[in-house]
Length: 305
Image 1: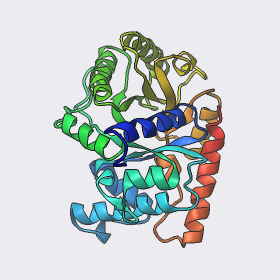
Image 2: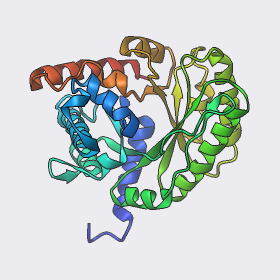
Image 3: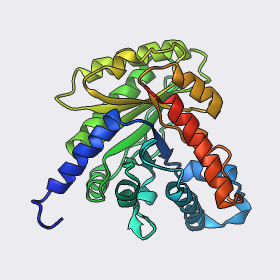
Image 4: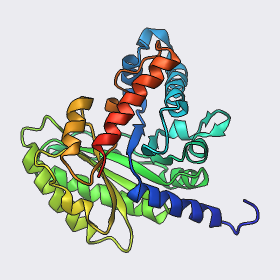
């Protein structure tokens, strides 16, 4: 890397990564469960809360789980475009290499970092993100570690003012992330149990379109709940300022999520729970790899544009 002028290598990698994120076949693996959702993720993986004590042990176990997924021969860059990491995963290593470096240089999977610190209390039918303290410092560390983009999540329960506040905040933080040279994934999740899900999705689309018009010559990604109306987000998929539209599974099981996804053309998956469904710590490597391969095959097929 020494022969290159500072930043050249990063720019070259970024061009290649941007091409893959924008046009690559497959889907984005969401491996970013954090603090609050980690015990739940471990429990589904077959590790009960009484099998570890304290955060350190818990995070070691979840890193082992993620390492097992990422190093599996089933986890490949032909079907997986990118992977979203939790900050602690970015700071750790896989097979002796920093995680982002391993993902890109061994697996050809683009590394993305979850940057939000969770949700503020619900107000006006929606929950904005808590303030992200130290974001600039985190973004510069991410760039140094070879991260391509970021992800941040808010939740919408009902149409109205809260929804607008969510989108305003998402785009405000997105500008800060773009300024650091990273591509943000904006994730205003509409709760699948919302009694007014369809109306919230219509309002959300209009709000996003308004904000996209205010961006300079820059692109963002969008991570959205699978909509009640098929192809509702077609306009966003085709928008020049949107690099990719991805869908969250949002609590739908894998079969349901994949069926819904396949009906939304141009949208690819970014599943977390639906990806790891059926994986357990107790499985032999053969069983584990076979289960993961089936999940990846199904999700990649539903993500075909």
